[in-house]
Length: 243
Ligand code: G3P
Ligand code: CA
Image (cartoon, rainbow, N blue to C red; front, side, top):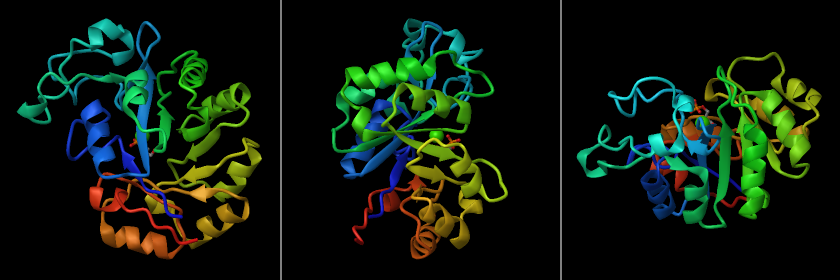
């Protein structure tokens, strides 16, 4: 089974990581969606990739983590994408969970560096428990300590290991973490046959990021990836049942 992830929702069709971007992805019958979470100043889970507003609203200075949810909800992050999205704001994770069909796998990436969001793992796990969603999420992070914390809090949740640079034998590194990982998420540039084969031999699925060209996607599927993260609806709308 190939499972492709709509990266930050459908970010070419609506402002990334917002509810309209999630809606667009859902309209493509996507099997899985990826989003990023951080904490607001008052400890709400906010769905956003960058640490500051500059890409989303040029008139709002400073770090997102220094704003309360009420303040964040006053910031228009839609106009920069197009006038038709004027007034769209960042969403809380709860807002996404409220609208997301239960059968779509949600990959939640904890954005935890360079600014550590103290306690984000606990808040996230409690939120997912409240929504009865722990069974159909995949939690990932470049911050592997954060994944260790999640594992202690949620012994059965699916965890994905994000890799952002070329490690020597990343599958050995992954195994030695003893995190009972479901998947590893390498940069597409470090994804090759050997990495896929070794990862599979340890029981990990391999989901490279970010694959936007169909030609690249087809090559990766041919060498055995289990799915990709993609901004391209032509790619993320495809799931192939090759079992
Ligand atoms: O999870 C895959 C991908 O989203 C990681 O990179 O920077 O887009 O969050 P980034
Ligand atoms: Ca991400």
